[in-house]
Image (cartoon, rainbow, N blue to C red):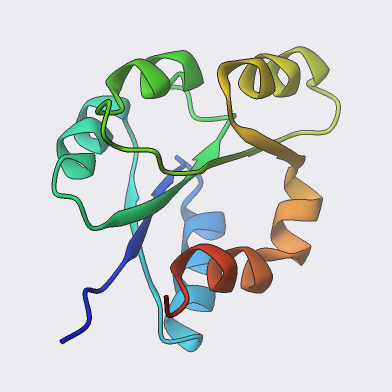
Amino acid sequence: MSHTKIGLLISPDLFFTSKVTGTAHALGLRVESIDDVTTAAARLSSGDVACVLFDLGAPRASITNLFAALPASARIPVIAFGSHVNVELLEAAQAAGAEVMPRSQFASTLPDILKKHLGAS
């Protein structure tokens, strides 16, 4: 019996969220959408989360708070994406420990990102 790995998407953008969850579904993978770090922290303790996809434009979430909320045992990748013009935010996310990319690159490489982190182990 295989253990299903899921991705957590933290984003307030409903259109973009449906693109991410739809792409995951088409690949036979699962991404759950949430919009705040408190919910993410509770969800991370379940042990089946393989990666976090973090929208740096999320007003109710902070990348620093996310890393503080990650259980010590959870060494899962955090992929942060945001506007290419918001250099300070992208650099802060990278300094916190996230893999960082502009939103356009995240969108164009989404299937590869999902397969890499959520595909069969």
